[in-house]
Image (tube, rainbow, N blue to C red; front, side, top):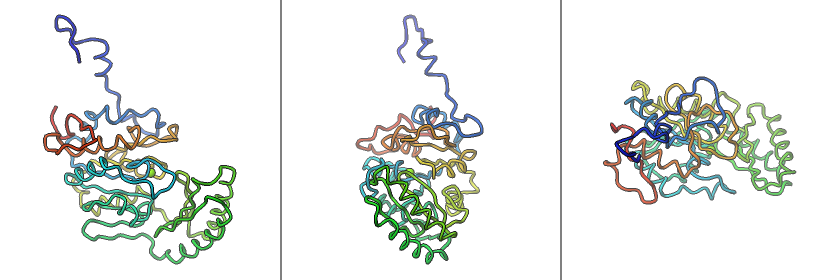
Length: 312
Ligand SMILES: [Mg+2]
């Protein structure tokens, strides 16, 4: 801030900058486009955390990496990997993805983290811990997989991905006017398998075990598995799409939901602040990791001036 003549510091621009935009807008969802930017409110994040131990949970696609035309191309940017590694040295950290467990673990490629695959149906810890929801439905998923592959064989660009606990019908390479055919095929298989339920994501339809399970419940199970529940942790969840809303709802009163903005900015969200794109995520992660003085410089990442646990 530039001081005016005779020590004047109350220039209008300074007043505007000092005015806090609350990241706790009250109950109920608000459109993503109306959320304050997280990186401009790190002081308020620190105030919200209030010295409680922090635990951080992240989605993968669209959050740590940009959405690309094929999931195999969604490689983790190096600055993000380094920020994750740094954060994992400081706080409990978990990546919960719609990807298959082995897939997301390979994409992130860091030890010392918890991973949740298939939207948290399949959870693995750094010490070999493994938690599986609904293993009894694996044969049903096998049968539905064959039916879905047959039903989509005639739709150019459509492809079926088998995850351990889900079937994904990807349509990001399908012509727009044929996407209804993809959805109809998924609906037919869903109708034949009432034990599976249809959900949607970015350019994908999915069939998953029709049990009350979502990323929010996975997050609650992870908090329990991490053994941090009794410490009243400040839970940070960073995600981008509608499957992350269950987790945003869980952390709404127990921490902070941060949505990475994408195509659907008008969507109502339970997140309380936003990042403009996955490229901003490392800066927030480093802020959550702690003071800059305790950090080795990360090439390509502009570190925040101070960590969340640092007194201004
Ligand atoms: Mg995502």
